[in-house]
Amino acid sequence: MDDKDFLGYFTQLGNQDTVKIKSASSNIVSTLLALDSKMGRKVSMDFEESKEKELAEAALKKKYMTGDLGKDMAPDLNYTVKRLVRGLISDNHAVKRGFFLASVQVLRSFKDAIDFQKYIDFINDETKTSEGMKNPEIHSIQMGRMMCLTAIVESEWSLKNDNLTVLVQ
Image (tube, rainbow, N blue to C red; front, side, top):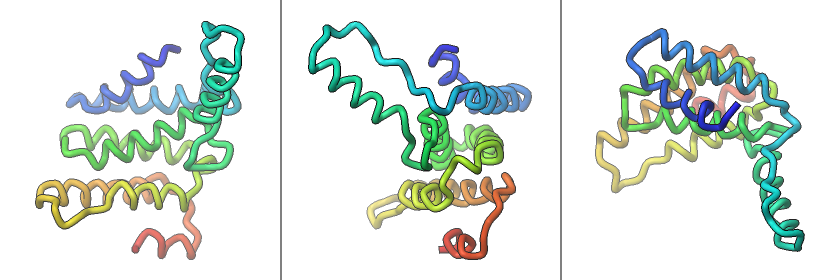
């Protein structure tokens, strides 16, 4: 699979055709399931044999072999979860329906790989507002936060009692 195909699925989430949204959402989940969670992206071998190559490989492995939203989380899943959250927070309300569906499906399929607390912290960081923001921007951010939390509930992510307070804060 080409990265271009995978990234194209996110663009298709903004489509007005429900069938295309469902297809793109399913394709995202299918692609993530097909990827080996222990394999990162291959490092380009075009570099000369040198310390520069070793440093570049180490940096790429560090970047692509782990996700910051969960221990042993695949980088593609990490990217997907973050992109879906940012899509829900977007000012473009036309894409929110597709991003919501994809969020629910991804969370449902990969809830064991995603660290709940880190995911909530990421949502809270992405949805911070400041005094200088205009009302439409604040509305969009707050709506996005609500949709992220609703996606957690819709995905049937089992919540422990101590995690429920994290959602409400």
